[in-house]
Length: 245
Image 1 (cartoon, one colour):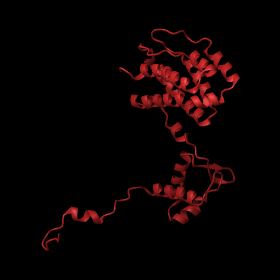
Image 2 (image 1 turned 90 degrees about the horizontal axis):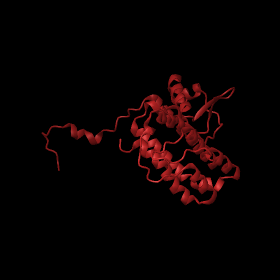
Image 3 (image 1 turned 180 degrees about the vertical axis):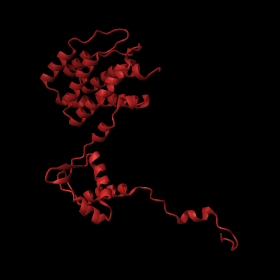
Protein backbone atom coordinates (compact mmCIF):
# COMPACT_ATOMS: atom_id res chain seq x y z
CA UNK A 1 0.00 0.00 0.00
CA UNK A 2 1.48 3.33 -1.10
CA UNK A 3 1.98 5.90 1.61
CA UNK A 4 0.09 9.23 1.05
CA UNK A 5 2.34 12.20 0.25
CA UNK A 6 1.07 14.29 3.16
CA UNK A 7 1.21 11.46 5.71
CA UNK A 8 3.40 12.17 8.74
CA UNK A 9 6.09 9.81 9.89
CA UNK A 10 5.49 7.97 13.16
CA UNK A 11 8.01 6.34 15.43
CA UNK A 12 6.92 2.96 14.03
CA UNK A 13 8.06 3.98 10.54
CA UNK A 14 11.70 4.00 11.66
CA UNK A 15 11.79 0.65 13.52
CA UNK A 16 12.66 -1.57 10.53
CA UNK A 17 15.62 0.72 9.69
CA UNK A 18 17.25 0.61 13.15
CA UNK A 19 19.77 -1.94 14.33
CA UNK A 20 19.79 -3.01 17.99
CA UNK A 21 21.99 -0.82 20.17
CA UNK A 22 25.12 -2.57 21.36
CA UNK A 23 25.09 -1.95 25.12
CA UNK A 24 28.12 -4.10 25.95
CA UNK A 25 31.08 -2.29 27.47
CA UNK A 26 34.52 -2.09 25.89
CA UNK A 27 35.98 -4.71 28.27
CA UNK A 28 33.04 -6.98 27.34
CA UNK A 29 33.91 -6.69 23.65
CA UNK A 30 37.63 -7.21 24.26
CA UNK A 31 36.95 -10.30 26.39
CA UNK A 32 34.89 -11.82 23.57
CA UNK A 33 37.56 -10.94 20.99
CA UNK A 34 40.27 -12.55 23.10
CA UNK A 35 38.31 -15.77 23.49
CA UNK A 36 37.68 -15.79 19.74
CA UNK A 37 41.44 -15.24 19.20
CA UNK A 38 42.26 -18.28 21.39
CA UNK A 39 39.78 -20.43 19.46
CA UNK A 40 40.72 -19.24 15.98
CA UNK A 41 44.39 -19.90 16.68
CA UNK A 42 43.70 -23.33 18.16
CA UNK A 43 45.48 -22.38 21.37
CA UNK A 44 45.96 -25.05 24.03
CA UNK A 45 46.59 -24.92 27.78
CA UNK A 46 50.12 -23.68 28.39
CA UNK A 47 50.28 -21.51 25.25
CA UNK A 48 51.51 -17.96 25.90
CA UNK A 49 49.12 -15.06 25.46
CA UNK A 50 50.35 -11.86 23.74
CA UNK A 51 51.55 -9.11 26.07
CA UNK A 52 49.18 -6.38 27.24
CA UNK A 53 50.88 -3.70 25.12
CA UNK A 54 50.66 -5.79 21.96
CA UNK A 55 47.00 -6.56 22.61
CA UNK A 56 46.22 -2.91 23.29
CA UNK A 57 47.87 -1.80 20.05
CA UNK A 58 46.27 -4.55 18.00
CA UNK A 59 42.76 -3.90 19.34
CA UNK A 60 43.28 -0.12 19.52
CA UNK A 61 42.16 0.18 23.13
CA UNK A 62 43.88 1.26 26.33
CA UNK A 63 45.93 -1.11 28.46
CA UNK A 64 43.39 -0.49 31.26
CA UNK A 65 40.69 -2.10 29.13
CA UNK A 66 43.00 -5.02 28.29
CA UNK A 67 43.81 -5.54 31.98
CA UNK A 68 40.13 -5.64 32.93
CA UNK A 69 39.35 -8.15 30.18
CA UNK A 70 42.30 -10.34 31.21
CA UNK A 71 41.26 -10.11 34.87
CA UNK A 72 37.84 -11.47 33.97
CA UNK A 73 39.44 -14.37 32.13
CA UNK A 74 41.64 -15.08 35.16
CA UNK A 75 38.60 -15.11 37.46
CA UNK A 76 36.91 -17.70 35.26
CA UNK A 77 40.09 -19.80 35.25
CA UNK A 78 40.66 -19.43 31.51
CA UNK A 79 44.11 -17.87 31.86
CA UNK A 80 46.77 -17.81 34.56
CA UNK A 81 50.08 -16.09 35.19
CA UNK A 82 53.41 -17.89 35.30
CA UNK A 83 56.78 -16.55 36.43
CA UNK A 84 59.01 -15.55 33.53
CA UNK A 85 56.26 -16.47 31.04
CA UNK A 86 53.50 -14.01 31.75
CA UNK A 87 49.89 -14.92 30.99
CA UNK A 88 49.21 -18.34 29.54
CA UNK A 89 46.08 -20.19 28.56
CA UNK A 90 44.90 -22.44 31.39
CA UNK A 91 42.95 -25.64 31.44
CA UNK A 92 39.38 -24.33 31.92
CA UNK A 93 38.25 -25.01 35.47
CA UNK A 94 34.56 -25.92 35.31
CA UNK A 95 33.97 -25.34 39.01
CA UNK A 96 36.21 -22.38 39.85
CA UNK A 97 33.60 -19.66 39.32
CA UNK A 98 30.95 -21.58 41.24
CA UNK A 99 33.38 -22.14 44.08
CA UNK A 100 33.95 -18.40 44.42
CA UNK A 101 30.25 -17.64 44.72
CA UNK A 102 29.04 -20.48 46.92
CA UNK A 103 27.91 -18.78 50.13
CA UNK A 104 25.22 -20.87 51.88
CA UNK A 105 24.01 -18.04 54.14
CA UNK A 106 23.17 -15.95 51.07
CA UNK A 107 21.04 -18.64 49.41
CA UNK A 108 17.26 -18.64 49.57
CA UNK A 109 15.24 -21.79 50.14
CA UNK A 110 14.67 -22.28 46.41
CA UNK A 111 18.42 -22.35 45.70
CA UNK A 112 19.03 -24.75 48.59
CA UNK A 113 16.27 -26.99 47.26
CA UNK A 114 17.87 -26.98 43.79
CA UNK A 115 21.24 -27.94 45.28
CA UNK A 116 19.79 -30.84 47.23
CA UNK A 117 17.92 -31.98 44.12
CA UNK A 118 21.22 -31.93 42.23
CA UNK A 119 22.77 -34.03 44.96
CA UNK A 120 19.92 -36.52 44.75
CA UNK A 121 20.29 -36.81 40.98
CA UNK A 122 24.08 -37.15 41.11
CA UNK A 123 24.19 -39.79 43.82
CA UNK A 124 21.49 -41.87 42.18
CA UNK A 125 23.34 -41.57 38.87
CA UNK A 126 26.70 -42.66 40.35
CA UNK A 127 25.57 -46.27 40.69
CA UNK A 128 27.17 -47.59 37.51
CA UNK A 129 30.52 -45.92 38.27
CA UNK A 130 30.48 -47.27 41.83
CA UNK A 131 29.79 -50.85 40.74
CA UNK A 132 32.35 -50.62 37.95
CA UNK A 133 35.18 -49.22 40.07
CA UNK A 134 34.61 -50.39 43.64
CA UNK A 135 37.43 -52.45 45.19
CA UNK A 136 37.35 -54.86 48.17
CA UNK A 137 39.24 -52.33 50.31
CA UNK A 138 36.57 -49.71 49.52
CA UNK A 139 33.86 -52.01 50.86
CA UNK A 140 35.92 -52.65 53.98
CA UNK A 141 36.18 -48.91 54.58
CA UNK A 142 32.43 -48.44 54.05
CA UNK A 143 31.78 -51.21 56.57
CA UNK A 144 33.89 -49.38 59.16
CA UNK A 145 31.98 -46.15 58.52
CA UNK A 146 28.54 -47.73 59.02
CA UNK A 147 29.54 -49.91 61.97
CA UNK A 148 28.04 -47.46 64.47
CA UNK A 149 25.16 -46.24 62.34
CA UNK A 150 22.13 -45.20 64.44
CA UNK A 151 19.26 -47.66 64.48
CA UNK A 152 16.02 -46.93 62.63
CA UNK A 153 13.59 -44.72 64.52
CA UNK A 154 10.19 -43.15 63.82
CA UNK A 155 11.80 -39.82 62.95
CA UNK A 156 15.20 -40.96 61.71
CA UNK A 157 17.79 -38.21 62.15
CA UNK A 158 21.08 -38.99 60.47
CA UNK A 159 24.46 -38.36 62.02
CA UNK A 160 26.13 -35.56 60.06
CA UNK A 161 29.67 -36.89 60.52
CA UNK A 162 28.75 -40.35 59.31
CA UNK A 163 26.64 -38.95 56.49
CA UNK A 164 29.59 -36.91 55.19
CA UNK A 165 32.07 -39.79 55.60
CA UNK A 166 29.83 -42.34 53.90
CA UNK A 167 28.78 -40.26 50.92
CA UNK A 168 32.26 -38.79 50.46
CA UNK A 169 33.56 -42.34 50.18
CA UNK A 170 30.98 -43.10 47.48
CA UNK A 171 32.18 -40.09 45.47
CA UNK A 172 35.77 -41.27 45.95
CA UNK A 173 34.89 -44.75 44.65
CA UNK A 174 33.56 -43.28 41.38
CA UNK A 175 37.10 -42.15 40.51
CA UNK A 176 35.62 -39.00 38.91
CA UNK A 177 37.67 -36.02 40.09
CA UNK A 178 35.10 -33.42 39.02
CA UNK A 179 32.34 -35.19 40.94
CA UNK A 180 34.58 -35.41 44.01
CA UNK A 181 35.43 -31.70 43.85
CA UNK A 182 31.80 -30.75 43.38
CA UNK A 183 30.76 -32.75 46.42
CA UNK A 184 33.51 -31.14 48.52
CA UNK A 185 32.28 -27.71 47.42
CA UNK A 186 28.73 -28.54 48.51
CA UNK A 187 29.71 -29.77 51.98
CA UNK A 188 29.49 -26.26 53.53
CA UNK A 189 25.94 -26.02 52.17
CA UNK A 190 24.98 -29.33 53.79
CA UNK A 191 26.67 -28.28 57.03
CA UNK A 192 24.80 -24.97 57.00
CA UNK A 193 21.45 -26.73 56.52
CA UNK A 194 22.30 -29.20 59.27
CA UNK A 195 23.12 -26.40 61.71
CA UNK A 196 19.91 -24.54 60.81
CA UNK A 197 17.83 -26.98 62.84
CA UNK A 198 15.60 -27.96 59.90
CA UNK A 199 16.73 -31.57 60.08
CA UNK A 200 15.08 -32.13 63.48
CA UNK A 201 11.60 -32.04 61.92
CA UNK A 202 9.67 -35.28 62.25
CA UNK A 203 8.53 -36.90 59.01
CA UNK A 204 6.67 -39.98 57.88
CA UNK A 205 9.40 -42.17 56.45
CA UNK A 206 8.16 -43.65 53.18
CA UNK A 207 10.82 -46.32 53.00
CA UNK A 208 13.77 -46.56 55.33
CA UNK A 209 17.12 -47.33 53.66
CA UNK A 210 20.21 -47.26 55.84
CA UNK A 211 23.86 -46.85 54.89
CA UNK A 212 24.37 -50.50 55.84
CA UNK A 213 21.70 -51.55 53.37
CA UNK A 214 23.43 -49.54 50.66
CA UNK A 215 26.72 -51.24 51.45
CA UNK A 216 25.03 -54.66 51.27
CA UNK A 217 23.72 -53.75 47.81
CA UNK A 218 27.20 -52.77 46.64
CA UNK A 219 28.42 -56.18 47.83
CA UNK A 220 25.61 -58.36 46.50
CA UNK A 221 23.22 -56.25 44.45
CA UNK A 222 23.28 -54.46 41.12
CA UNK A 223 23.26 -50.84 39.91
CA UNK A 224 19.48 -50.75 39.35
CA UNK A 225 18.75 -51.90 42.92
CA UNK A 226 21.30 -49.45 44.29
CA UNK A 227 19.76 -46.54 42.36
CA UNK A 228 16.30 -47.24 43.72
CA UNK A 229 17.53 -47.60 47.31
CA UNK A 230 19.66 -44.46 47.09
CA UNK A 231 16.61 -42.54 45.89
CA UNK A 232 14.65 -43.56 49.00
CA UNK A 233 17.63 -42.98 51.27
CA UNK A 234 18.03 -39.38 50.10
CA UNK A 235 14.31 -38.73 49.63
CA UNK A 236 13.74 -38.95 53.38
CA UNK A 237 16.28 -36.18 53.99
CA UNK A 238 14.84 -34.13 51.15
CA UNK A 239 11.34 -34.52 52.59
CA UNK A 240 12.50 -33.32 55.98
CA UNK A 241 14.07 -30.25 54.45
CA UNK A 242 11.62 -29.04 51.87
CA UNK A 243 8.22 -30.71 52.04
CA UNK A 244 5.24 -29.43 54.04
CA UNK A 245 6.97 -26.19 54.93
